[in-house]
Length: 152
Image (cartoon, rainbow, N blue to C red; front, side, top):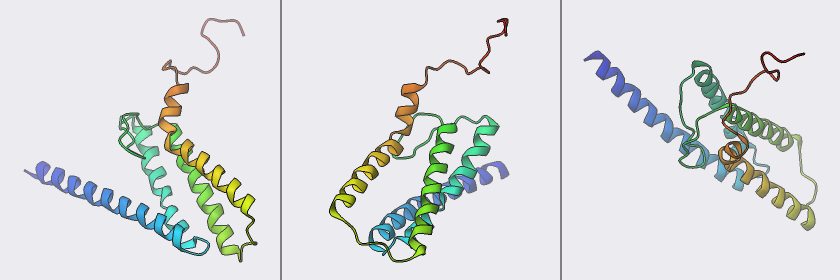
C-alpha cells in the first residue's frame, strides 16, 4: 500500500513539475517579448540549469528516457541534450549580462534583419537537435580511437 501511495505522489509531483515548466517557459517568452532588454525573461531562462542537473544524473544512471523537448520525441536523452542546454544557458547568461549592462545602442534595420535571420537559424538548430543528432549518429558504439589488436 505504501508503494502505491508513493507512486501516486511521484506521479502527482511529476505532473506538477511539468505544468510549472510549461508555465515558466511561456512566461519567459512573454517577458522576453515585452520587457525592455528582456532581463526578467532571461532570469527565467536560467532555469535551464535545472534541466542540465536533471539530465546528467539520468545519463550517469543509465536510465533510458526520451526527451520531449520541442514536441514529442522518441530520441533518448544524451550528451547532445546537455550540450544544447549548456549553450542555451550560456546565451541566457550573456543576454542577461548585456541587458543589465545599460542602454542598448540605436538599432539599424539591416542589423535587425541579420540578427533575426541568425536567431531563426539558431532556433531551428536547437529545435531539431534530436533529428540532427540522429542524422550524424551511425549507431555504432564509440571506441577510444584505436582498434584493439592494431599496431600503435
